[in-house]
Length: 194
Image (cartoon, rainbow, N blue to C red):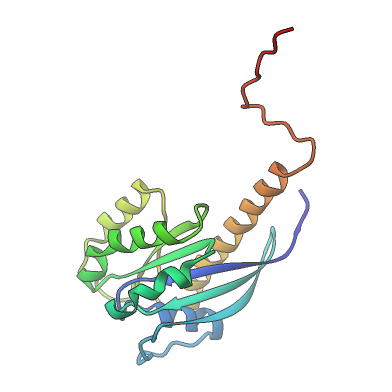
């Protein structure tokens, strides 16, 4: 299997206000946790190179505002995203109850191949949402599920490592499918008449 060169991929974080989207990104990008991070206005992004055993990926990580008044901007920011993270605050029932709304926004605006990840954040605190139910829902919907704390770099890094690996594995599939002379073994043969 050949190694990939560094590719660029857009990742978007969505969720209700104050669930920790900005804190997760700050922890991953700068290895800092700020408990009083300001709310995002519109969106912002950072880039980070991720090294994996399968190759390198340059992630462009977009932090979106969770406030209702900024939701109309999310389609613009989620365009061409190949990965999306829905962040749920384990102490915020509204972030749990609106998960389907956020998923619908993502499915309507991201690439069809966009993979969705569910991140239960603030795991260092006592949950007030049904965390087991969130995990079962994620598994049923076939979303990769993580429990993180924006205070802990390792728990945040695992999320982005998984995304980078999934992106590279997806590119491997595209490379194989786009090889000249490749044959789809599942394709039905058409019978020709003489």
